[in-house]
Length: 273
Length: 236
Ligand SMILES: Nc1ncnc2c1ncn2[C@@H]1O[C@H](COP(=O)(O)OP(=O)(O)O)[C@@H](O)[C@H]1O
Ligand SMILES: [Mg+2]
Image (cartoon, rainbow over all chains, first blue to last red; front, side):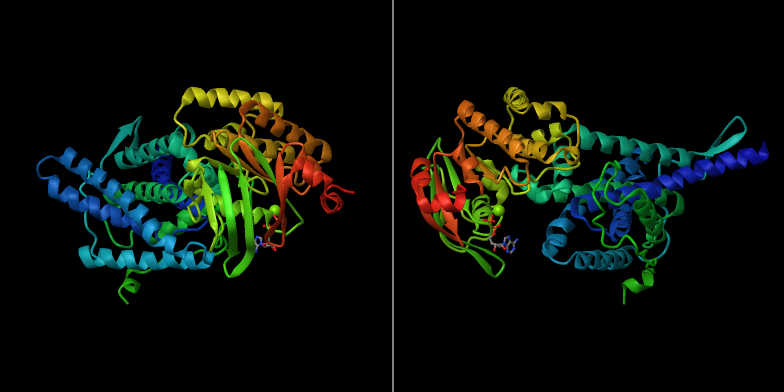
């Protein structure tokens, strides 16, 4: 029973941890689908979003814990969406029509830049994220302890996946996003504003990544390099799951230009050099 | 004049492909573009829809200068371009492809009745309605592409070699449907075709392109009577 209990706890924690990888992986896939490239800065953007959420949260939590945390998260998600869209518009689009490899290198540069900016503003120390509850808490069901954080994380990510699925299959903007991911030139001929869709795609990916980043930070605290190691797992999930298609319906060969290379984790120290 | 091109040049990067193309499409008519492989037919259509650079010349649609406008804007003005190779959205279903075509429309009832019209026009599409674009045969993809363009409710339908890569009987089916589309909706058309016999089953007049220049324009009857045209494009 005791061994089984430990097993269940590990599975619950594993599911939570895995769902974080999955969320970051999905963010990477969203961008890859829309643009054909792997955004190595996805984790860095998620961490930046989390820092914004933390700062807003720290400001507001003293007056009301739940509301403060919630507003922090909302601001972080909205800011990440905007930042993702702006990065697409003003950074990535400059490389449009150029070499695919150049764009990938640009995202690596972006990661370095973002990590540097975070370190500049918030430093390298681990900072606690103000969250709804103490993430060390757990509750027991039939003698098995389940971590409240694991349950919250897992359910949140599952809910997000469902919402995204509905967005893609039931809404007009979802149809536009999928059309552009499928064939941007052809979509433009139907009047779809391709640039706008790419911005939305980058924004959605950044917002999704930030939610994963906040859930991670709530447990492990915040650090500029929070997602460096996880990026490797997320990329593994992306590559094993198929880069092209979150819904795994794609029959076309992968457009990814780096599906065989796995990146070395970046050390925060490299950011300032 | 619905569409008017005057002395249009076009270039891919530094490579100039069109030298001097002029043509016009009167409101309600169907105009063909004939020419050998590489003459610049596809590039002419791309110049209209804004997918290739047009360094000089003028392109006017409904009186507005559309030269150099982005493809999204040209589409919004009422030109629907079925590109060479059909431009199918491979991972979207037939239904979704048609809805993408109607992306800029707000009239729900009109969209539904136009889909019903298309499924009647192309019974194959009704059978494959839930299938992904990639699962369709070449002919079905062509029908879907024409359907998607039509769903935009355009003033001008631009078709790039609808018969390309199709078996002769399928090509004929597609052209029969195009002719019916024209008869029943009165939509204006600009049709690129290498097979002049097929083109002449739909168009009222045609322009002949040679190495990036429009060299001859005439009604279908005039062109049929032209010995050179008959030899070059009508198989004797
Ligand atoms: N994307 C492109 N880049 C460079 N040259 C091109 C491109 N597309 C076509 N061309 C060249 O432009 C010329 C005209 O091509 P095109 O308009 O496709 O002719 P057509 O449709 O009449 O067969 C050809 O010489 C072709 O090689
Ligand atoms: Mg062509």
